[in-house]
Length: 543
Image: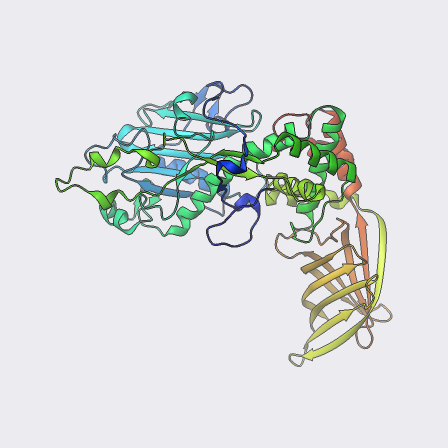
């Protein structure tokens, strides 16, 4: 996975980072170019916009625009979509509101979040809209999962008739500006949007909301919008690494199967930084060698970032704003932009493999992984139990409430745990495992209480705990992927004995993934999240 810079300089996952533009000396290979637009209509599959709003050849696009935004919010609830108002922009619609640019600003939309519930369609970073009320038109960029590309469409005469006129736009024309075949957006400080105080002040007459979008907003929301466009433009690179990078034939299939298995394991254990891929060395080395031979300087795409532009800094004395819409040089989105480095090989074969597995893992939503985790619960086998003796500190919080602080295990090869349990009478009120390690398999941190009971009829009396992953609410797992079935503490009144029971449910996942390979879902073609989840649901339901 390539190295990127983020706006705040924080270390976050590559899927949330902004690509760095590189000079020609680095020589990344272009994953695609504006000179090869491809067919105007989908070569396979359908656009996400069509999936959402077209049935039997007829479009039902919600109107007015507030309803369309509300429908998108419903799809990603409880999150909300991102919007920005751009009265003096750079799109083909920029002259439509002349001369009243601040009475009809262009409203752009990005879906940068995923909903809490499992959904057939994944909208995050895959749907972008540009609405100009003065033109009764919406420009649409939405992802086509089967074809592995973004489609360009336009809604013409929006709201004038019961059936919207939705057309596929000329890719050749669109790619003059959208050179990476995806959405574009300005760099910080986004001075032509309503995140800018001067722009927002001129838009104040529109009220608090404009067609459902806030008229005033801070830069954080526009920053999220910008990050969504950056992530979207990296999709073609991940698809290329997945399909062509792994190669054809049985070796390519084995590569994709291993990547997908490790992608799921990475997410099931909570997407932890400590995770390392458990892959056959020859598969990782073959992938690393192939990728470094194909693209020794890495892969790039034309930058999706336009230079920041502050149109109100140059308002002419006459007050005529039309001249501000004529742009030259790098401010003009049709000017060819440099390649943004999107991927480079890792330092080792394991790094290259693991980074790609993480990239693939991010395509699945938290709800997808929650569903898979719950489904695998029916398949736990091969129980393995670990034990350790604990040191304990009891802290009395009240007459009935006591906190047990535990430090268990001593030797590096044993079970080791650090955490606490809070008891109120004979009820488990709270518990947390701050660190848990078995042998040299790595340390899991911050598991929290899912449920717990005090067992009085045990001898010696004990506490039984069911733990879950600390942020995503998944089952507690070791870094190997083994599910933690139960954690029990016996004789907690004196010298506690810790008992950890684990189960292995990953063989069921392996078998289901093998069936995907047999069905051709893992062939050398674009990554298809929906087909993969559908195949897993079918196979795991049969077991």
